[in-house]
Image (cartoon, rainbow, N blue to C red):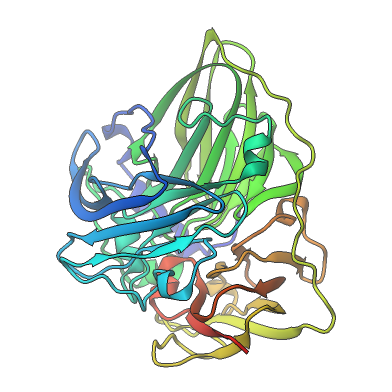
Length: 459
């Protein structure tokens, strides 16, 4: 299996120290499939809880439960109304990551839900089928709240997706898989206690959770299955593969279907990214979904046992109906320089985030080309970033001046930017006005100021 190398030796030592002695004290559990909710009036309670992982209990947060939240499933054109109650005893928000939504309901740091309050966003689902997710976005507290468990998937279907002959039975042949690394101590509990190296390089873990379970298991019949993969970590790069290095078919990225499916034996996913894959199991066997943390450990995230029963097989589609954002030479161009000036000074274009400052404005229905640069800060401190834009799905048009690979051909809202890289994206801002965010989705970097805001104006 290929390794991902990007970090310095000091960070590798931190990971190894955190991981020592932890892996043998936990037992595995069945893969939990979050319950489905939708479509009209939806209730989410943000609450504190406890997650038990055999050897110890961790103090957590969840939506409608102790850890993580239900999967929201809606269709394009649905009018959805939420009641989101804050029972945490502290402020938080709920951001719809990847959703095209009016700014007042985006759930960013402007839409704070205070303890005891109920936030009531409502909007029309106005985009194509996609696997999105939701999580808090409170200024300076996003990393802690996500780490403690406040996250869930948000699935949109449309007439086209429903017409496809692919697995669509949720929890039977269509599975959400939220992957998160967590740092457990020798007592089997995790806390969010970042030190400066964690802020610099991200808060990484020594075990892997899938839908909140450690070394989870899944028993399936022979057939074709769809996995909706989410890198729900705070700041870890994952390489996703199967233990026997088998090929699988990638059919969708962050914002929906690719124009052409891609066959591969592994995926690199930065925090916040999603992929949908199809895989065939044709005989009785045991294999595992494997996650490798960049520069660190390899984890068996989900053990899959194929029994002798027969499920349904599907032909993997080769093409999909999708029209990417096409760049125009006349579009406005902007550059976003992501840099770390040491001791947690994470900036974009030389500025740390301020809610009092609008970094730039643009007009509704305008198209732009943005260049994202990862400036780094020298050989020993070169670390990756991922760039996320609220409200829009964009097209990646070049990486270091070259056309990106086929996995980047679909709609994206989050893109990995490695040290020294220059990534060009094409965006179109339509339908809504108001203030939206752009930021690094390595959550410790975001909380330390690597974020900005722009305003979409009517004219």
